[in-house]
Structure formats: structure tokens, C-alpha cells
Image (cartoon, rainbow, N blue to C red; front, side):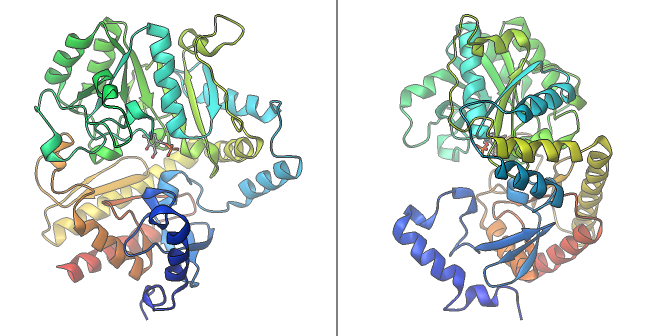
Amino acid sequence: MSSLAKYQAPGALSRQLYERASLVMPGGNTRHSVALAPYPVYARSGSGCHITDVEGEQRIDFLNNYTSLILGHAHPQVTKAVQSRAAMGTAFTMPVPEEVELAELLVARVAYIEQIRFCNSGSEAVMLAIKAARAFTGRPKIAKFEGAYHGLYDYAEVSEGPTPDEWGEADSPASITEPGTPHSVASDVVVMPWNRPEACLQLIEQNKDDLAAVLVDPMPLGIGMIAPRPGFLQFLREETARHGILLVADEVLNFRLHYHGAFHAHGITPDLATFGKIIGGGFPVGAVAGSRRVMSVFDHTGALKVHHGGTFNANPVTIAAGLETMRLMTPEAFDRLNGLGEYVRDRLRRLFRDTGRPAQVCGAGSMFLAHLTSNELIDFRSLSGFSRTNPIYGNLCHKLLEYGFILSPRGIFGCLSTPMNEAEPDALVEALGRALAALG
Ligand SMILES: Cc1ncc(COP(=O)(O)O)c(C=O)c1O
């Protein structure tokens, strides 16, 4: 029997839960990225690289809460650290010693940061970094890349997924705000095309006196994980430095790439950085970090410029889980997992070659994203028709759920966790071959 049979049955628990949820939550949902048509599969528990749903079906998890669970589910040491921390109290109007330890650990690992502050999500971290950049430079605008996702802050959301009728000029993309955001926000966000230095140069020049920051994720998921062309990030570093603009590295998702962080391989020094996901060990987290000079805008003992409160900042449970996770993620653990990432990307490439399917496999480290196209992939617009909006990916996601695998419904996107070895990628690639054949 298919592992979706129980989910699809008229009395399925997931269906019942979704019907109840729809009465008390708009769309029956509280996080759009977990929405699935016609209703989500509700999870009961997770262990290692597996999730068991409410019907009792077990599947291999290649999403890991959108990359945040690098050690998989319920790692025994992380669970123990959380339990013992929780038993000692979970929140105080006082800092706890472990906060200092996690701050020291991250500052020691990421060469370009000297100071750090914790918050509760990647979105908050990006918001704080943008505010810090504005306070430090005294300038109002930021620049970001068309299609890049950086969370929910009004300015960071601009043009995170514009439709072709909204695009505007190729060399000067339109700034498209999300519903609920004042249009005035658009005038403070310069949208740049990824991997097109000539256009970026012009846009930076035109706005140089007003730009506080350029926000950049070196392997942006919203732009299909299309890698930066050689020299592109270095170009951004040089141009921003020339005009006193801060380069803000969004490491929320891509800190997963390397023990020393996503920018390590590129040999450049951003001014500010944002973190989230894996540094919370499975709990809500964010962090903003950077050079001592720039981070001084948060220093309440100096000429305070940027207010940073937050009832649950650096909450002890998150910090305990994050600390244990980071300690377990040694350089060797990263190397092994990234080697497995190389293995799965290679296997996917072979699958597409052997079955004569036009496809390209992007991603790096322990992540993969396959695009079913042979078009040249360079920027957000080059993904048009093959991006997260293409219904093929939703259909593939359902087929793979049926075969016992959890992947994104918005692309052949997934990531690995340390409990995996070659058996899981092997099984996934075999199932993907079957799913593609079944869908034609
Ligand atoms: C690059 C990037 N920045 C920021 C965020 C926002 O993080 P959070 O979902 O924790 O608010 C995300 C979330 O996926 C992200 O991928």
C-alpha cells in the first residue's frame, strides 16, 4: 500500500486536523512554507533522519525544517542538553552563562565577526542588521537581489518573488512590495539582478550616497541556489567599500555550508552578518553579528543608536540546544556531510543524464536544488517557468511523499542531516527517477 493511502482516506487524521485548523486559522495554517495542497501531512514525531506522521507512516526527511536541523531530529545529546536546561528554568530577566559560550563559539568560528547579539528568528536578525547599517551610515536605503528571500521584514521582502509582469527593466528591476507593506518602502530598496555586475555597478553608483547596505546571501535559495559567478562577491565587496556602504552577509540558511560560515570560501570580509536556523539546534533563533565598530550601534553603554529588546532573546533553551549542536558540528562533521552533499548532487546529475532529462543541479555543501531545464541559469529571471511556481514540483513532492521521502513542494530542493549516510541519497535518487517516470 502507498504510504499516502492513509493520508488520502476520507477519515484521515491529517484531513481531520486540517479541517479543524481551517476553522481557527486562516488557510488552516500558521506558516506558509508548510502549506501543502490539498492539506498538509501532520507530523507526530521525528528521530534521526525520519519523521513519523500522525497516521504512523515513516518517511526520510530531506527538508530538516528547511535546513535548520543539521543533526536531524531529536539528537540524543541535544535532547539531553535541552531537558537539563529546561529543568533549571527556561526564561529569566537575566542573561545565562551559556549565552556567553555560544557567542564566543560563533565569534571564534567566523573570522569576520567580532561581536554578536541573539534574537528569535532569521527575519529579526535581518531587520536588526538593516537597522544597524542605517544607524551606522546615517543613510536610508538598502540594496538586495531580485528573487532573494531574507525573511519577513518589510524592506528585506521587497521583490522576493516578483511575477514577470512586475519585473521592470532587466538592468534596473522594479521594487515590488508585499501586500501589507507601504509603497513608500519600495523607494528605499534598490533591487539588483544577481550575477550581473555591470547593472549592479550602475545601480550602486546611482544610489551611492543613500545606500546603507547591500544585503547578500551567497547561495540564495530564492534564486534557485544559482552560485555567484567567479568574482561577483568580490566585486560587491569592493564597490560597497569604495562608497562606505556596508556589505551584509545573510548566513541564516547558508551557515550550514561550512564550519567557518558561508563566506569563508569566498575570502571576503562582510561588515555585518545574520545567522539563524542551525545555530538554534532546532529551536527559534536568530543572531546579528559583525565588526566591533559597526556592532557598537547596539551598545547601550555607549551612544546607543539601535534599540534591541526582545522578551525571549538568547532564551536558555535555544542557547543550550544551539551550543550542543555547534559543538557536535566539528570540522570533520561538516566535511563528512558536505562530502555526502557532493555525492547526492553527483548522483542526481547522473540520473538526469542517464534518463536524458534536461536538468541542472545547483546547491553546495549539504544542499541540493535541481532545475528541470537546460536554460542558462544566471539570475532570478533565468528561472522563469522552472522556479518554485512550476506545478511539476508540487506533483513530484506528492509522488515522493508516496514513496516515503520529504522534499520541498517548491523545487527539487533538499538537504542532508548527519544521521544520513549514502543509503538515504541512493534511495532518494532511485525514487526520484521513478517519480519523474510516473509523472512523464
Ligand atoms: C536566507 C534567509 N534569510 C532569512 C530567513 C528568515 O529566517 P526565519 O524563517 O528564521 O525568520 C530565511 C528563512 O528561510 C532565509 O533562508
